[in-house]
Amino acid sequence: MPALVLLGAQWGDEGKGKATDLLGGSVDYVVRYQGGNNAGHTVVVGDQKYALHLLPSGILSPECTPVIGNGVVVDPAVLLSELSGLNERGVDTSKLLLSGNAHLITPYHTTVDKVTERFLGKRKIGTTGRGIGPTYADKINRVGIRVQDLYDESILIQKVEAALDFKNQILAKLYNRRAIDAGKIVEELLAYADQIKPYVADTTLILNNAIDEGKVVLFEGGQGTLLDVDHGTYPFVTSSNPTAGGACTGAGVGPTKINRVIGILKAYTTRVGAGPFPTELFDEDGEALRTIGHERGVTTGRDRRCGWFDAVIARYATRVNGLTDFFLTKLDVLTGWEQIPVCVAYEIDGKRVEELPYSQSDFHHAKPIYEMLPGWSEDITKAKTFSDLPKNAQAYVKALEEMSGAPISAIGVGPGRTETIEINSFLS
Image (cartoon, rainbow, N blue to C red; front, top):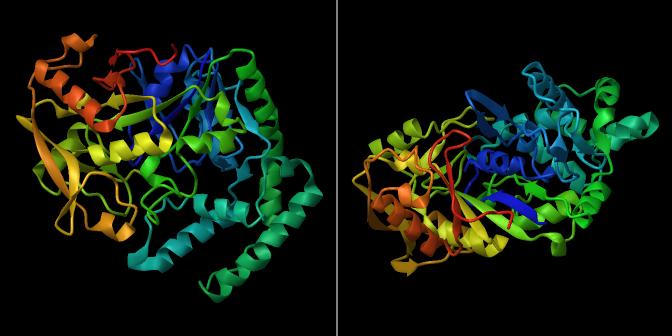
């Protein structure tokens, strides 16, 4: 039975939640392996819509065990609030597992995040202000607070005091902010300890044993490939590795145990936050994509920047992730256009470039080269098979598949759970 990685192949918000939920009934474990509550998934189940920020989408599938891996940064207040909200709606959250090695987002991380972003002014990155970056920075600087530290008060006090020794100097002398009281931070964190304890586990051991036993394990990335801290449009990126390699480090599972890597692609492109975006639209087409596609960030509440499909980015995602399949989402949003532009290459300094340039400066100056594909006007939301799609929609999908470098194995034709065409099973 397979172990699968499912990740965003663009800048995030591609519809990973729907893809994960679609597989949930056949999957034994769904694992978040990086990021924090700066990522959001919207999952529609019947007439119910669920917005998940930190929890794995598999928590909505009763047969599935949801896991928050060691590579995730966890705001305990957000975690407990999200669990409480689901419980109130009748969702059983008791099977959740939380890695004891995951790092905790504390109030001082969110404070540092917000004041730093304000200080940058026009040079700001466009972070969510939820403390994600500062928490990962503390992790790398070896002054982070882990979930397991909640259960040894003396260690927790030492770690919080060590982290604040430097941060308070910065807050007071650079940002003119009041110093943060270490004792109050410790008190607040300890208040979460008993509530979180039932979920804490050695998730690395559990997941490796599950794979060895033939269970199906799905690793779910937040954000997207172009937001990867190493392989994305740096510095306009997140602070972790949403790419496939991050699943191994963020969950403690070796790469030889991964069978398939599935990239989620929108039938067009969106982005939240600052940074280059070659196909971005500033006209009525961009506004139409935003309106029809309901392009507003689940976590941020910000309108997403919208543009046409970018095959250069898709090819790049195939390469750096070793993608075996694509799940194409939101094809229905494109219904009604007579012609649909697709970016097949870039023009940079007068030259045609068909692969993503490694140079940040070149990418900033990239101009899209479009190929026009015929559109369709028929409603596709009731399509159950690929042959049910209008001929032009079929041709659009086939063209994207050829340009992107991996087979499209599923297509989202509407927001609902059942509005998906499965061409090839991800679990075969």
